[in-house]
Length: 66
Image (cartoon, rainbow, N blue to C red; front, side, top):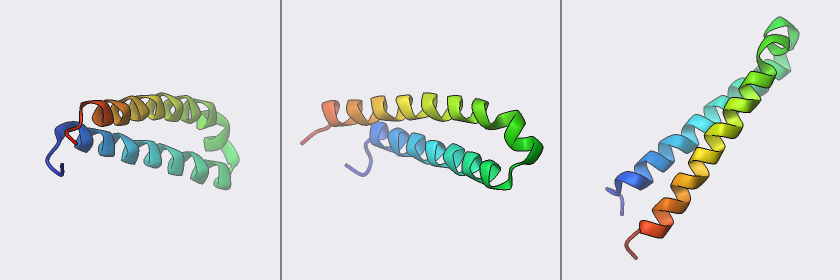
């Protein structure tokens, strides 16, 4: 199961979601021009990445051997 490529891709997608979320929270905490300029875009990117991650997790569960 550790070598399942779909599971590895799903894990990478979850890490990408976490990175986008952390960047958004950091921008929100800092405030200022960066937050005004990029907060909505980061939220849209996070939602799209989260959607892809959930689909990949569901595909890994559905196609998983077990």
